[in-house]
Image (cartoon, rainbow, N blue to C red; front, side, top):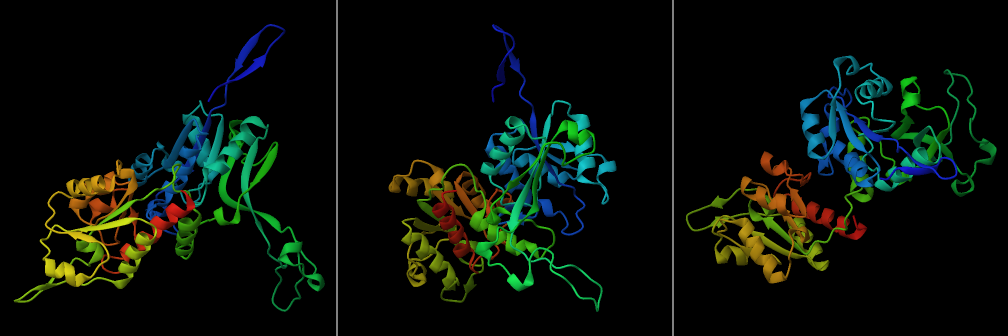
Length: 402
């Protein structure tokens, strides 16, 4: 980002130093509502990862920070590209305000001129919003900018039992239709930007003040556990999944523990496994989208068992090197990059492929090493609809161009 050039006299030019804009996400370890909620997985990723990705991909910040007092949060923050400010115990209490925590951060970082306080609990934030807000405070002369969302809610005055209430923002005899009423603006908590000058004075919203209206579908705020499943569905539908469009040409899935629950039933003559018809539906959905599907297993699956499974895709057993087999399939399909491959695995032997794949997923009951590969973590376990859930996720990524 270049500095501004300003004129100083008829022949002189001087550089006006660009103000340092820092994004900071406050992520204390001692959340009372949902313990360690900042790194709890939401739609397959730690909650904090969603806003860090949006901030970094916006390209508007000279530095992106997470302020925390917790080792696990620090590890996740660094994994997703943020710097870490280890806050002191004095600003890590239940009663500590966000402003106090930011003020401590500024004491340690004199280079910062503008702070964008981004809430980890707003996972539907998009880079496009941050780009516009930074422009407002960097170039349009605003001292503080905060996020709002428009609601069409009828408010009533709170009264004691037995007293009559009155409407506060409408006339009950002439209730407006939604399309005839602009509604009202409410803070949605996604972000608060302010200059160092305001913050050091103890002011978060002051000076030349402006709001930034976000889309309702992007205004997600998680406070208590009941918000979690609703937020998860909103993120899957409206969240920001990265800069580049998702193109998946091949899904490779481990049979053992993904298609099945990992158990094998044996008798004197043969072995049996079971799978969910929901997962077959998921495979067919991908095939309908021109995504090739291949299944592999480390076990030596008999041709009879393969035939009896009656699956609409190729299965290869006795696989000792999964990457080698995927490379072979990619070659046959003319794929030159793993970015076009989606991979679903659950065991230690899947980790290498999960790290290579452009889109990766694991069942809810996958091993820890597989879950730690930045994969989409399904709510369902292996053999119980995980493949269908991952297929839905892949199709969402492809159709929304994220």
